[in-house]
Amino acid sequence: MKKKILVSACLLGHKVRYDNGNVTCNDPRFLKWSEEGRFVYICPEVAGGLPTPRPDSQIRGKRVVTGAGDDVTKEYEKGAQAALKLAKDNNVALAIMKQDSPSCGSLYVYDGTFTDTKKLGEGRAVALLRQNGIKVFGEDQLDDVEKELKKINIL
Image 1: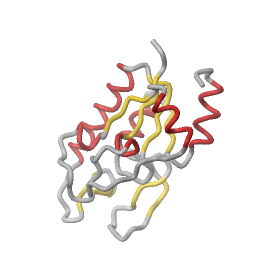
Image 2 (image 1 turned 90 degrees about the vertical axis):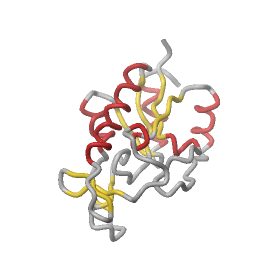
Image 3 (image 1 turned 60 degrees about the vertical axis):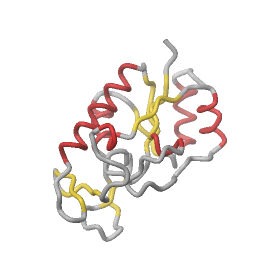
Image 4 (image 1 turned 45 degrees about the horizontal axis):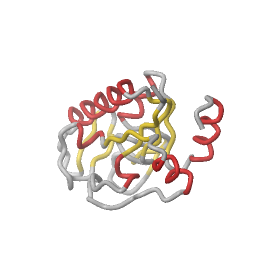
């Protein structure tokens, strides 16, 4: 089976973000990989049972909470498990996930204060993917993705 790339659904234009907004990735390489059928996609939050739109959530300590303080950790963990299952079921070589997200952030996440402050860290789905040996990149790291695809000989 040909190796695939797991991608955050919002980067493909799917209306799954918490604010129902659009963050489509328009990098020519990303678009080419999509056209070649290399992608399998997921929104871990939606897969975990959260609606679109939904309250903004951030990681605070070991929990994921909304701005109103509601604990949505269970839904984020369920979504992370769904992302891992999809990756395993589809022979995924690596993942490109939405930076800063409490599920998909690969370098940074918001700090839990809801003040628009970021900190080094990773989202719940990214952490689980990495714990299971899957390399994860943000949409702002496509140069690194391209190098990795060449390195593992699937570009």
